[in-house]
Length: 271
Image (cartoon, rainbow, N blue to C red; front, side, top):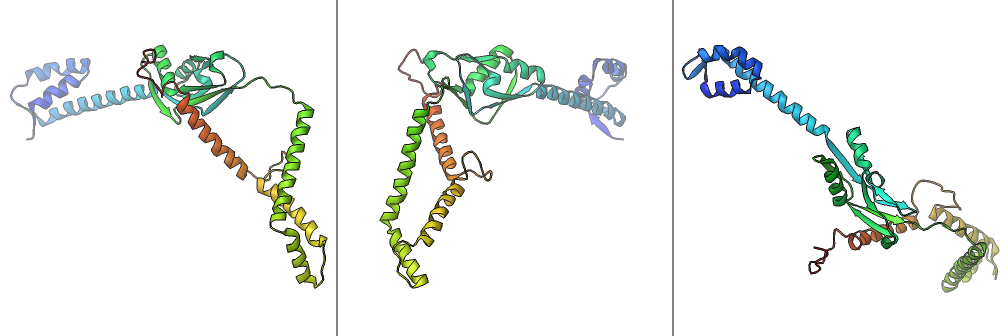
């Protein structure tokens, strides 16, 4: 006959619900000695199963209260107003918790803020914890959001548009002509025409005209734009350079405009 140690009996008994302890109380109270019989192992097994299930249910309830937050990279606003958490972050979780969290005000824009504001993730967490109590938060993605206050759009002036367009057109044309003059493009065309035809021509238009048309088409294909028309979804080299510039600018703003990342320890107002 197999026996179970006495301390298993004690642990298993007190892990059982109150009603089950009452049911088995009389039987367990009559047992004596330091060992249980083999059939008493089922009592311990039931207690362990109950305790495990209880822990899993409690763990599931805790996971149901998790709020996932992902800060947006950049937010643009046109007026001075209060910013809610739902404006600057994406929240995922139970519907009641998400709706309550997204409606919490996190910052109020004023004239002193000018046009660039950085909202740090720690500010959002502080607002949620102070308003909602013990909610488990999980941050995903960037830790800051850049708020860009846009001025009111003004109507474009046709005269300014015409002046800027003329300057760009003339400047681009002069750049191309100066490049061709530096590399002696006319002499190259003349030599190619002489090699192909055996004749000397000062203005080989049969080469210069296709070359000029191909130059324009090549620039259109290279920049992947013809006015507002795009040929495919691939970004143009200019767009890639602008994106890299914007990334560097955002990183600079996050470091220098973020009040949470820079503190002067000698200034008593900032400590």
